[in-house]
Length: 332
Image (cartoon, rainbow, N blue to C red; front, side, top):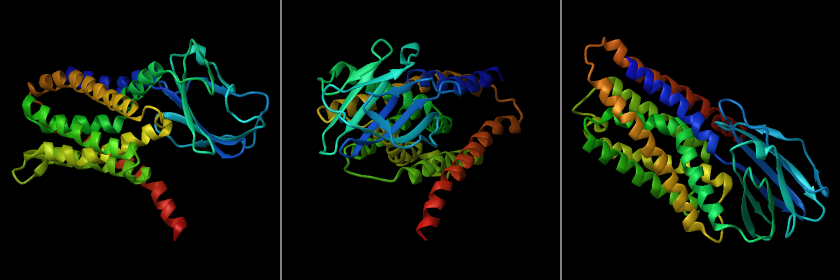
């Protein structure tokens, strides 16, 4: 029972620790000369987003009030600004409050002519200068940290990995299953990030919740000779991993890829995802071994975590279907 409590504590604290290092993002997209759509995303730390705000030059005026958008584990706002002198070479963007946090800010500007540039602001340098050479070192740490933060801050992805760990009977099966999941989501992450394949994000997120619900159902049924999940967990992990890769790509799309070094940024983001996943498996697997040593617990006690995961996944599925149903209703 102590091991179960430790497992629950780990699941509760990992997202909080991850969001401490998950970068904020500022995306600026030029819609007409000097007019930019702005998306400002701040990771929530233990339920609250750090008090950080972007600051522009005096010639930049807000054209609309910020609109709050729904974003799991983050505060997401969108509004529009007009800068009389544009945001080209020499323009500065500062971040009030950044020096008091441990958060980095990934800033990406997409201009009307198709050009883009990306920069990272940190606590010790809470300001960026547009038009200057972009630092390769900053991109390396930024995209790797974004990958680590996304997997550790994504409760749905972690619950899916946890269900896979509960399916497999031994370490060799675990290695095969997690490797299949890694291979699959790395493939679709790369295809989506490079623009070769595109799926709308709301259905992807709903299906990810459904994949967790499927595994929870299989675990509740116990081992079955006719079940593909029990007999070939690696095949299930690979199939659903293709879907989870599109979910990872959605997080990467929030900040974009630097046009001058797409392969390196994509590789580092994926390595960050794998590092976070490996850290989770390394921490949880010994606890699962300890839990499995105690076989004298009542059946309802053993079933409680599985039904809990299934209930949460079912709630997520219904919640994520709401915007999809709304879009369909509007189109009809």
